[in-house]
Length: 298
Image 1 (tube, rainbow, N blue to C red):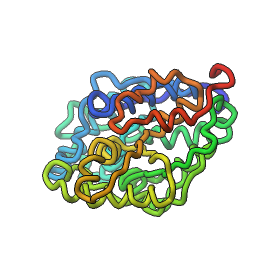
Image 2 (image 1 turned 90 degrees about the horizontal axis):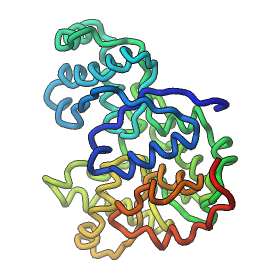
Image 3 (image 1 turned 30 degrees about the vertical axis):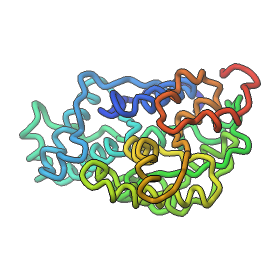
Image 4 (image 1 turned 45 degrees about the horizontal axis):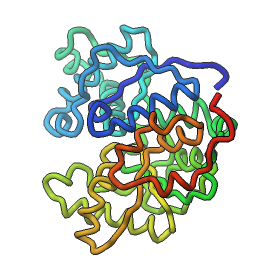
């Protein structure tokens, strides 16, 4: 990307609370990569998981309102770091291609939902609009020798007819970004398997089983850390790692990073801007293995 490009930015609710480190590191790396984020004014929740399980029209209206805000601000593309928000925004756009469905949605809005605002993930923009080669040129603190397991979760790339980014069964965009940072990406065959999602509240055993499998494979592949792009996946693997260990008789102490945190450290950004102190599993041993920057980030 030769010059800065402006995108509408939809942070999502988790970025204001449970995944503040993702939000902080996303903003920091976007600025470093020349991606200008314009936060949508007065944005509202996308409905997260509950809304679309109750009413597809209502769920689409919540997304339609946010897309209308983007249109009123003169923005043609909205990007978000959260796969759940991404799914709701893109699914609403996909469903509103049906005129009958759109008509029902518009009746709930102050003005008709726009039809020309594109929706992408921050990961997609970093991978496609910046690209691994340009990222590699900006690396001042390479992740040489770090064996990392990239974990995308089940939402980022699926269903493919809606998400329209990367391979739905074997995505590689995050792999390529991590390789551009100098890391060793381990072969990780569970990169799109579910972590248990929000069952951590109602059925903890579902998460300890499914997320336990994810940690088992990362450990078997000799990864020193896992890397994700999803706040809920990160929470299950990081915050609940103690519960997983207790349930499965394991003793993992594997840091679970957001890819934006590692991207930021490789670009030479200050660690305090990247929210490592918010991680539940101590990341210090892994961070100490990363050499100091050779010069300041440009």
